[in-house]
Image: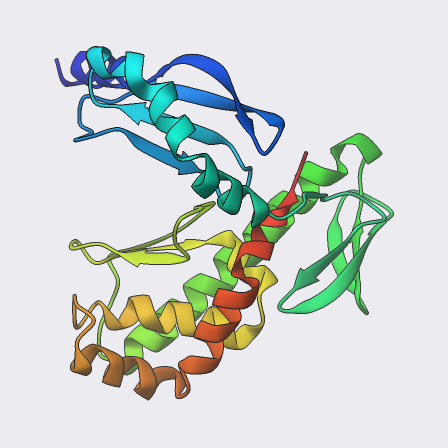
Length: 245
């Protein structure tokens, strides 16, 4: 019963159609979606891919969806202007790793490793992007798990679970069940930024709010919070540039 209900829910939230909307003289594809859980018409621009979507709360509202998006043309244009250009994770590209630029190059054998500012990717050339992405995710998982456990121990706390995903709207989260989640893209950022995000979520294991006691805990763990916050505001969107294809 639950599985069927979940399936029906997914069907109700699927893309109904795709339309073209002129934004500053250019034709932009807009995905029109239906989600009965939505309270109103909502326009979104994916910060990494630039995908534009408009969600309607009912089939009756679907008829007004594109017109509603058209009324948000100026806002959509501003959001699209901030979408970073894509960089394919392939030999010849340059990507940041722990905040330091590294050149991607072919390597011998089947493994992927870092060698003096170069990330060498072994295996067949056509598989290099996926192999490098897997490598970066493994590095992120190992680093984020180790830092989370270490910082949580300093607060005499223990997360129930730690997951690493590819999230577009947030760098980390802490659920009411004490589960921590982080974006793998933090491995691309400088260490002080990664540590700050981990400390921020670990502090929520003690304080599920953003009050004075919460920020006191974060500062106890990493000291300065303004520097990493400023870095994320200025450079955070650029971390979404990198993709396997």
